[in-house]
Length: 131
Image (cartoon, rainbow, N blue to C red):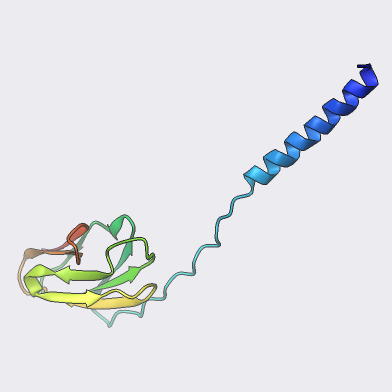
């Protein structure tokens, strides 16, 4: 093979490699979902947003002041989780968590205590610490 033919084949191979690499580098990521709007809390209410996704509840625990009204606003951001409802065993309270919908739950803050909450299957758990 002469130098010219070799250079031509090498050039074609290089172009093919570059095209292949650029095709691989394009991610098929979806644009991020817009943030779910949370209604503003009433004056004097401690409000905390809790994201529900395939990792569970975020934040993993919430601290609120005793005696001051409190509300948790749950937003489920994925269908890839069993956490399609939230359960407060001590309060005997269960609420469905529709996808990408804000669900507010008022927390009784009269006594200092820890209230656990979990998904319906108890695989994901978290807590509200009232102090």
